[in-house]
Image (cartoon, rainbow over all chains, first blue to last red; front, top):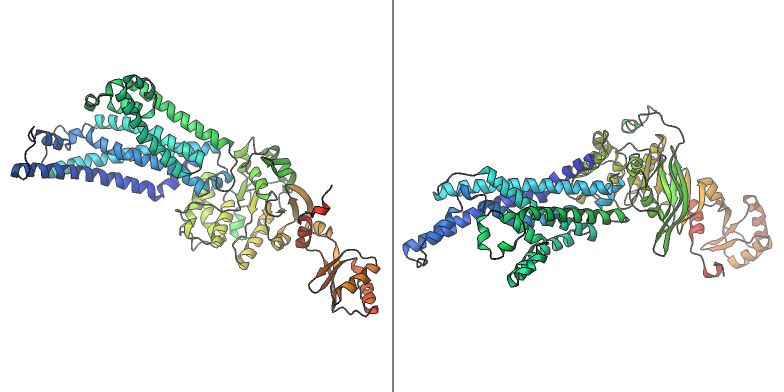
Amino acid sequence: MLRLLSSEIYRLVRRWMPWIMLGLIVVTAFLFYFLIWASINAQLQAVKSGTIPAPPEGTAQLTETLRQIAPDRVAQFGVGIVAGLGSVMLIVFAASHVGTEFGWGTFRTLLAHGASRSGFLVAKTVSLVLYAFVFIVVGTLAAIGASYAVSAVAGISFGSGVDLAEVARVAAKSGYTFLPYMALALAIAVWSKSAGAGIAAGLVVYFAEGLVATILVSLNKDYAQIVNWGLSRNASALTRAGAAAAGQDPTASTLPDPTRAAIVLGAYCVIFIVLAYWRLRSRDVTVGG
Amino acid sequence: MNPAQPAILRSYAPAVTVQQHEVVLRTKQLVKRFGSITAVDGLDLEVRRGEVVGLLGPNGAGKSTTIGMVLGLITPTAGHAEVLGRDVRVRREEALAGVGAMLEVTSFYPYLSGRDNLAAVALLRGGGALARVDPLLARLGLAQRGGSKFRTYSLGMRQRLGIASTLLADPALVILDEPANGLDPAGQREIRELIRELAGENRGVLLASHLLYEVEQVCDRVLVIKKGKLIASGTIAEVTRGGGNYFEIVVDERRRAAEILRGLGITEIRDTPTGLDVVADPTRGAEINRALASAGLYASAIVPRASSLEDVFMELTEPESPSASPA
C-alpha cells in the first residue's frame, strides 16, 4: 500500500496539472486582491472628483469593502477566494486524477505490476486529500501575502494582522466541505472510466444542488427537512457557522447543526468511496480499464 | 550463474537457490464466460522455470483473456490460476510479486519520460527495483531516449519500455503479450535473444505472439488454443509432427498429376500456385517422380518438406466449414 502511494506521489509531482492549479490559485489570490482594491479605489476617486455621484449612503460602504483587503479579514475574504475557486478546481482535479488512469490504460498497467484495486483507490484518495491540503495551504498563504502586499500598496491599515488560528480554522472547514464533492467526482470517474464524466457530475452537483436547495427552502422552509440531507446545505452549515455572513442569508436559520453537517459530509465521502471500490472490485479489467 | 552473461542479466539472477523446472504458472480448468460467449473453456497450462512457452491462437482465441486471468485482471468464471503455487484470486499480491507482465497494449503515463515511467513502476514493486531502471533502459536500447516523454515514443520504443518494465521485479515468471509488435527485424531479433536469455536465467516465460516464426525460434513448448480451448500442445517438434511431411511438387498439368498420385494411394493433395502439395512419407519421393515421368509429366521440382509451425497453426485453427460441422 505504501509502495503504491509513493508511486502515486512520484507521478503526481511530475504532472503539470497540479502545479498549474497551484500557480493559478496563487495568481488568482493576488489578482482578486488587486482588482478589488483597484476597482474600489477607482470608484472612491471618481466620487471624490465628482465624476460619478456619491451613493446615497455615502462612501462608507465602499470604504468597508476596501477594508476586506486588510490582513485581519483574511479568514473571511481571502479564504473565501480560495474556497470559491478551489472547490471547482479540486473537483476537476479529483476526476482527472482517477479518470485519466482509465483513459491512458495505466490502471491496467498498475494492476498488472501487482497493485491491488483497493490499494489503487486508497492511494488515489490519500493523494487527493494530501493535494487538497497543500492546495488550500498554498492558496491561503497566497491570500495572506496578497492581503499584506495590496494593503501596503493601498495604504490600508494592517489592523491586528492575520489571526493565523482563525484562518487555519476557516480554511480547514472549507477544505473539509470540498471532500465529498471530490469523492463524488472520483466515484463517477471510476464508474464511467472517464475524467470528463466525473468532472461534469461533480460540477453539476456542486452548482445545481445548492441552487435547487436554496430555491426550495425559499419557497417553503419545511423543504429544509429534505434538502438538509444534501451536500450543499451541510457544506454551508459548516462554513457559515459563526460567520457574520450567516445573518445575511434568509435561509441560514434553517441550516443543519454544524456538527451534524460534518458527520453527514463525512458519511457522503465514505459512501462515494465505497461505491467506487465496489465497482472497481467487481469489474473485469480489459483493454483500458 | 553464467559469468559470460551480460552484467545486466546477471544482476537479475534470483538471490536464492531455486528449484530447477519448478512450475511457476499453472492453470486448472480455467473458464471465462462473457455473457453467452465462452472466451476460455477449461484451459490447463503449465509454465516451468527455464522454459519459454508459446501461447498461440487466432484473434479472439482467448490468449489475452487467459493472461488477464493469470494476472488477476479478469475474474475466472471457474477454475483457477496459480503463480509459484499461490492462487492468484486468493493471494494476488504475493503471487504477482514474482511476475513481470507486458500486456498487448503497452500503456504508460504520457506526461512522464520513459525513465520516470519505469521509476514509477519500480516504486510500486519495491525491493531494489529502482536500481534496475537505468541498466534496463540501456539493455533495451532506450538509454538515449530515457528522458523523453512517453507520448513521443514510437510503437517500437513503447514495446521496449513495456518489456523493460517486466524485468524490474526480478520475476520468476515473465508474461509477454505480442512483445515484437512494432519492432523492426533487428529489434525483433534482439527481443528473441532476450527471451532466450531470460529462460537461461531460470525464469519461466509465457509468450503470446502472432509471429509464428518468432515462436518457432524461441519457444520450448507451444500451446495452441482455439475458441478458448487447448487444441494442441507440446514441443515445436511434437506439434509440427502432427502436421506431417509433404512434398512440394512443381508441375504444369496439376489435374493429371493429381490423378496419377491418387493411383499411388495418396489421398491428401492440395493445389498450389505452382503445382501440388502432397502429403506422403518422405521415402516416397523417387516413387512419385517415377510415376509422374512414366505418364509423361516431368516435374520441375519435387521437394520434401516438413510442416512448419505456421502450416500446423493454420490447419489447426482454420474455420470449420459448415459441412464439417457435426449434424
